[in-house]
Length: 340
Ligand SMILES: Cc1ncc(COP(=O)(O)O)c(C=O)c1O
Image (cartoon, rainbow, N blue to C red; front, side):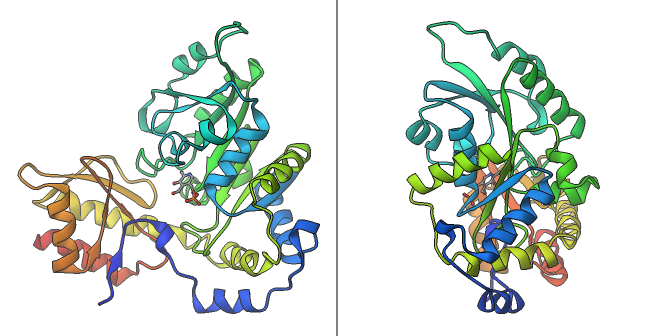
């Protein structure tokens, strides 16, 4: 049975054309800087993000981790939203591997409360950990695929930079933000020091993220990537999928966004679920109505309708639309909510 898999946009599988592009990739030893396909992907990522340099890494988690490692010292504090990905879903890496603490900040719809940000930044006090980095997320996953308003990014960066802090944007889904807002990735990234983006989510590549920033920062990140065992050899096979994704899978993200909106409307008119936040991109967050548990709804949709969904946190179910969810899959999902 073919399931309609709405658990995450990480479930996409490489298309036949993408696999062909991978087969034909020109490769070399990337640890020696000699893989032409990786090199051109990194140059392309630097140009897209408007930064001096970029480095291809295995995952969004590694890109975020390296951004933290090169812009903090052990004992420092990183300020981020209480629902930010590194705080909840990166297996404690900032503390375990990079020796920093995270101060989670409040804020509506994935934005930082700017007063809280301002207050959290303090001068050097011997017994306190020093905030040296602010982390923003765009789109904001756990807030529901929210496009962070550019004025907010600018304001948060201004506060951080005035106090001498650096800013990293976790742009795992920044192409969704770009397509939804009409701003280029470079415009979104301009106020920040570094930005990472993923090729393996809505863009449909099997592996890979890019960390982009100033040349000296990326050069140091390259050393730490190697320390972590993240140096890879003929990675051009994978980078070719990234090139293909950037060539073919960016503008089509608008389809994912309209599919998510269609599903959100079906949820709003259903008897089993209630929408939690307005849909802006490819993520839909909802809750079940009283008397139906998350697990009951999730297993009923799997068994009766062949639709896979997952809890994003207790009491919240998340649907993510992507490359492998077609127009007719979307109609089927909407019908399932109407029939349930
Ligand atoms: C906002 C955000 N940042 C970072 C990541 C980590 O990416 P990866 O799974 O490639 O480590 C994810 C993964 O879903 C994410 O949603």
